[in-house]
Amino acid sequence: MSGPAQRAAIVTGATSGIGFAVADLLARQGHRVFVCARDADEVTQAVKALRAQGLDVDGTVCDVRSAAQVREFVEAAVAHFGAIDILVNNVGRSGGGVTADIEDDLWLDVINTNLNSVFFMTRDALSVGGMRDKGWGRIVNIASTAGKQGVVLGAPYSASKHGVVGFTKALGNELAKTGITVNAVCPGYVETPMARRVRQGYANAWKKTEEEILKQFEAKIPLGRYSTPEEVAAMVGYLVSDAAGAVLAQAINVCGGLGNF
Image 1 (tube, rainbow, N blue to C red):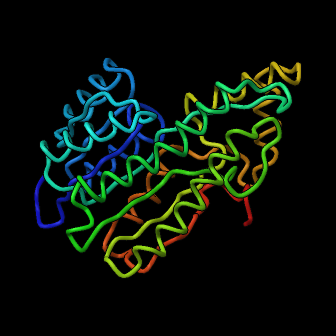
Image 2: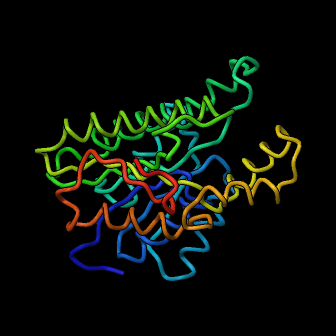
């Protein structure tokens, strides 16, 4: 797939769920997409699956908690596809529990994975990735409706996603006149492998079955169901387009009406 709109894109945490759906959509739009995750086999399988559809995708392992690995990853992306036009910071993890019982390691890993990684990757995409020298760019951070309200038994996750929203708004305003837009997409409940792990965690905490937890969560959603990764990816696809040039420093919900804020 080639053409005048073809651009170089990075998608983190792109081997399943929302990240894979975003990588698939961007590649179908004609972009060259470079992906990462921590598991080498998962990266290989994701790249293979996307290439099998004729899409221009490559990738490598990266632990986004490491500033050094992030720098190496961005350099590899530039070597493969040229200066970076689009960055989608998708990688993330769940994490929580009774706050008084949360261990340091859990708190720090959630913050490092969900928030610090967004800073590392964004800084390097702008600088060593060359985005700030191009006069055009799109940065989309996958936050959460939990980044706008507190989540019971999810203090680390909610804190990290609030940080992502704040970072997005600050950087979006900073770069407003450069041709680079920065926005966040805030999914609600999305059916992904992480969502299943979250339901298991609540089932254990509340002494319920996973099916009971699913019904409880669905009852809170006006739409009556979880969103799909493809529905979240569609919003990302719009935000990275030329048509979205006036949308910046926003945190946009894709949540079936769950969050009216």
